[in-house]
Every structure is written in C-alpha cells, then in structure tokens.
Length: 237
Image (tube, rainbow, N blue to C red; front, top):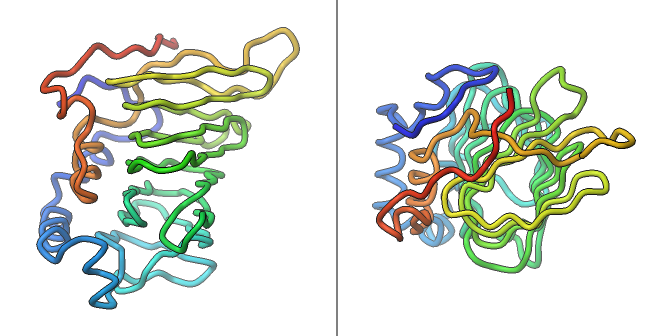
C-alpha cells in the first residue's frame, strides 16, 4: 500500500477498490467494453454507486447515466464511481460537484468541486480545469486528487498524482510536473502570505489511481515507467 497520511477521513474510505462489489462492477464494466459499449447498449456510465447520491436534485440510481452539465451530491458513507469520455471519477462521501460540458456531450471542460473530495483520471485532450473555492488547476492527461475539507473556510487540497498541471491560487501560479504525487494547499488569499503552499500526500493512494485508470484503458505514470519515484510535495504539519 502507498505511504499516505489521513486527515479527516478513515482508512476504510480509501480501500474502496478492495470491495467485492466494486471488483465485480469493474470486471463487468471492462468485459462489456467500457464506455463505447455503454453508448451502443444504451446502458449507464455508472460503474458503482454505494449509499445515496443525487443528480440535479433527483435521487440517482445505478442504472442511470451522469452527463456533462450535471450537479452531483453524495451523502454520508456514500461513494460514486463513473466514467465520462476518456476520464474516470471517484466521488467521495459528502461531496458536491458539477461536471460542465466541453466541446461534446462526452467531454468534461470543467469539474467544479464545492465540498468533499474526488479522485479523477483524465485521458489526453485539450486543457480542462478543476476549480475549488480557492484553487484552479488546468489539466491535460493526468491523474489528480482534489479535496475541499469541511469547516476550513474554502481551503483546498490538490495533488497532481502524475502529469502536467497549471495551478493558480490567489495571485500565485505554479506549473506542476509530476510522476508520483506533488501536492499543494490552495489558501484563502491573505496579504503578504502565499496562496499556494506545499503539502504532503493526504487521503488517497496509488491503488485508487490505478483502478480508475484501468476503467478507461489507461495506466498511471509509475505503471508505465515500471517504478515509483519519490513524492515531490512538501510536508505540512
């Protein structure tokens, strides 16, 4: 298991890829031909739904599809894994996000996370964005983890797990190039203080990224290289 640190979450929440229900759902999704077959067979793009979630205010069922333009809310002890285009998403419990439409129905141009957390793997394509209350990330083909912790005034956590990401928080800008986790806090702007500060790897694992990548026929940077580099984020205490 990847070395990681927990903050405001439990180990069980990170072990979703070990659940029998997910393994069965992922195997069925892959065997059925993933997203292309889902369109051809008029079936949904939800790989797994545990607990309660709503889309545009209506209760979500596993047979439905999530489309660009939808607002997603997950409840306590809930998790949602779905695929849009060549990207895969795992939405954690108590999350509120929007997936905004790109050049086509199956292309996400912007993922707007208001609260909660999402692990996402993005296939290659034009620059897309992830936005939180305090941080904007311009991404290409990459794997990332984004979290807006509760009761921290909009402070955001972002980890570029692998790939190239253009980060902005307040007046600060940074180009992140990572092969094995480079993490940051997006802080509420305060005069004289940095709005983009180094962080350590929190609340996610290599294995989560690997399973999401597999859903869309991809591999992580460390799987392609055959080895894992050191984590390049700093430490926050």
